[in-house]
Image (tube, rainbow, N blue to C red):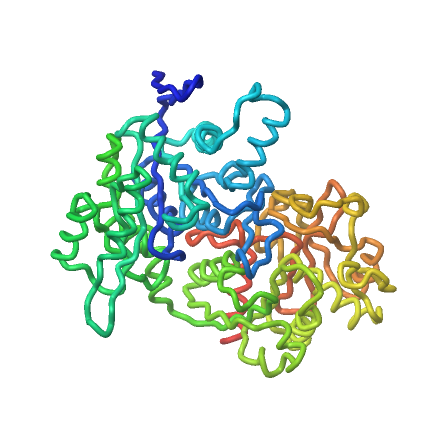
Length: 552
């Protein structure tokens, strides 16, 4: 192990030369160009070369994490095994690669400033003036190195959130710039995702936005080594040459990224243009020859050319925003792959179900899924949708709040518990079939105080849950405050509800199902977070399999 460093004031920063090398992914021109998919896809093609990768996201917002953010503002909150509430891009990282994603994999401006200010208050800086450079940038760099250290990865991919030119992103970009100075040219690679717009009226592709974006990045001190060019039209050799000339990179490193039919095609697009070879040559890493034949055959081909089709209604509160249920939609795609079927997702607003009734909105569905959420808005619509699934014998899958709503519906309509509810929605309900645990009653701060992360669940044999998992002990990820009220367990069980999964440490209900129904199962946890395109989650897989049965 060798060391190299440089001086900043009286502090000497050291770059530890281990196996880890670093790839920074930035974005320009506009947001939503797909930096997360790009990062995950690069991770995928590098893994297929036999390399161990780690991925992380630097988010410029001042929130400590997205846990208290409105889904309409931020989209889905992705939960890691160790209980961190993180950005939804981390879900892409886990779905595409074998990288272990942890609480260290998501860094926000709020976390960084909170850590630095806390040290200053303790007097750790010995009276020094605290500044963005070096104190904030050093904190960012230490957190990146932490991921390298904890993961033992050969390559750490770091996605920088926001768009080049945003004030909020500047400390992260400065830290990324310093990495090459600290660690050397051959240990750091910069990828810039940019837009090449097609002007329909002129009938021309325009490269100027990309030139300006790269120019802004170079003003910060970062010269990209590869460009991922999002474009509607193919890039001609002349256009590639022009981009390379004005952006000072090699023509082979101008990567065309047209919209794919499926996001799971993107690694193949990059591989076919030799992006992995360009990166590994720059990083001076040995690699084995490979192809992605298995990924193409077992994932992409089944997404693009499925044998069957099935309609699934997702009845949610945040339907207008595509990213609010991102992992659920992807888990349904994965279940479709496992059953050689295209899953057509009908997005149904639960408030519309309240107004118009389920018959009109759900009559074409071969399966109904009710996802998680918070707050009373739209709850009665979810309950009506669940009642429709139960009485019409349509396959049903409930997740988190979906399980709680299924419990409420069953208590009201099967057990005749009039007004049964959750204390989240009605603190004075006579029948609180869902309620807070005692330890949650004392909680004052909302951020990071729920039951979060991976918990064990014991599965009862001879149940649908056991048939799906084929094991009696599983681990699943949670994000909730309210639990099934055990005072009502005997009554609901007597009326036909099966409690097939239990958290043994506190005797908490994790999985419910109905005996006299083709497929009715609901879970307190979030199985969508553990689904992968080539390894569909068992509950989603069986849900789609049963929905296909109903359709046939």
